[in-house]
Image: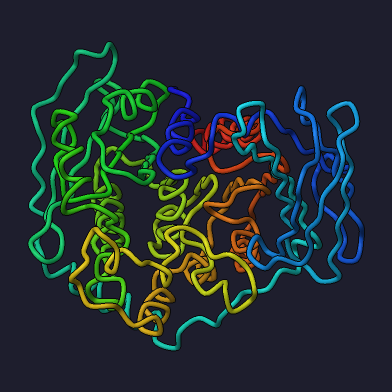
Length: 434
């Protein structure tokens, strides 16, 4: 199967905005796992390679609240820094140096303390289940109107189709489906959901899993066809989908993510009605925004039997209440409506955005997850901060395997996500063979 790590590599460009120079400073915790008991001290070894001079550093509680800062002299390009916290949570160390061109070079170190005790930042809304039950009922009143293209067999041993279905508010669901050629029964299903951005779907994202024996479906996150020219997506991203996470984010009935979540729900409904399904395995997988959708649908749709979510977004929208950085899309902190993107738009109400966010928080869907899963997280991920991700993980009562990557950020920065994908392949194979 096509290795999905390249999805995450693209995320480095879409979400992280890290400079190339960031790789010049490496920060290592003294415990290889990056995991400590509350009250322990972490010692970070800073390796600035060929850089010289005095570095500045700061410690961030939960990736948000500054609790210490200072300077340190390099000795042969190296320095040692320490930190601790008495309660469960994450410490993020940021180290800055100037290179020979005077440009800022950033290094990050992370440590997580008593992760299994990290608590949620807000309760589940009282009407959470009632709200989503009502939305499913609304969706069910709309016929699926499935439209499948003629089968494409240009990939040896695989049948490939494009698919559209109807969704709420007159919108469409666009995707692709592939399966082993001539195989019409007893197939496990994989639903893939996409990372952030506006872009086409690649054919091999579906045909790759099909070669391995899956009935694979991949849906685009937007109400857009999947295979237009690049210019089409660039224009959409620059205009109506510019900062799409902020669209309707102060009302649970108008949020951009409402349609996205119901697209996932309808995709699952469609897949389990396919005659090829083995009635045993419906696995959902994705990274970042795809991880967001993955955790959501694992707790939302009763047919999901397994999930794999790497560096999931959408966790802990109310994190500021717990003095930690909330995850992408930083729901209640969106300022797009008051920037040059829309300078004349009325300013939104922070309290309304925050309240709306609770209905779209993985932390709340996680309490409903009953399937086994695999979750990856990076301790220096500033896009989807690890404290909120682990608070979400702690809401999951079902079996799960958590891969903590102590020196990894959101994309390909640091050592990347190889530790997650080392477990991902065997996990998928285990589910496929059930």
